[in-house]
Image (cartoon, rainbow over all chains, first blue to last red; front, side):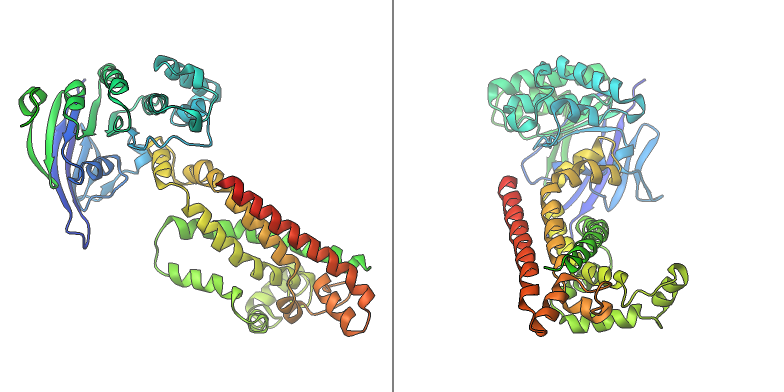
Length: 232
Length: 218
């Protein structure tokens, strides 16, 4: 079953002159939101998750409506079943890696199974040795892997990533980018990935939506819109 | 040294701290979490006890809780005793002094928690209540504990409002702060000195503890 994420979001910030008016569709696979900082990509991602309330538009996953300004539907964040990887990663500093990952796993399956699931995910991302340590002691790459494990452990219906690799150096970035791509493929769900890095977009993305000053400038395949040769 | 007034002070302060911790943290969470109509007004009213003369505050409480007031009569109908000029009155007086401390510092501590962490909790399936209890509260805990310690120290020393609404009844509402006044007034300085030393020592110990908590938080 292929279910696409349909996004049509309008956000206005009173007084700032900033406005966002973007519509696109994200089928299973990785859709890149590509654009400069300040173009509204992160706000758009937050609106999809339900962290920012759009002033108009509609967000739906297949026939499951998450937000609809017309009919007043606004499903709370916690019931949208998204996985969100923040730019700052937002690992809980007071919890161990294992507890961080277990936090997002369905509470109805019981504590022991949640912990087991958390261990499994940490293991798959190669950071099982961090299970009982807290985030303050992690390196950048380690924190990144724990954050990814936490997002994916809850079997999300949509994965949202806000420049998750921006704080890493190039070598680590390439390894993780490939991992992210593999995980999203395996989940078979839509993923929306925000970045302004062309190389990263090419490694991870299937499709690209180019965002400029809060509007869609173009949408299409990665090769078409972000060709390998830089400058363009 | 008389132990009665000191024991009463501790009893009253403990009760007032408990009440103001529960109510104060809940209000602080509300003020920190969302904008709502009347938020600024609520903040001002809750902070007012810090700057109002105790006699003015005491007067308001007498009007609101006295034996002829609606609240006073309701309380008396249920418990069989009045709020004013009883131990309950002393607890109310101490609570009114302690509450602003917890609301102010509690709000600051809760607002210092990175909002992205709360957003992360929400995306991980936590409703607002679970996000508050599992993320905001633990991360603000040092600040909240410091606020509760200060509130206890403040409760222990209330004088003016206690005198206004609980009176100065030895054995019933005469806390250490009131007993010290009585002893000095009556030329019994020796009776006062022990209580003075104990209250001072507790105040200094609490402030030292609060500073230590602040250092470790950094």
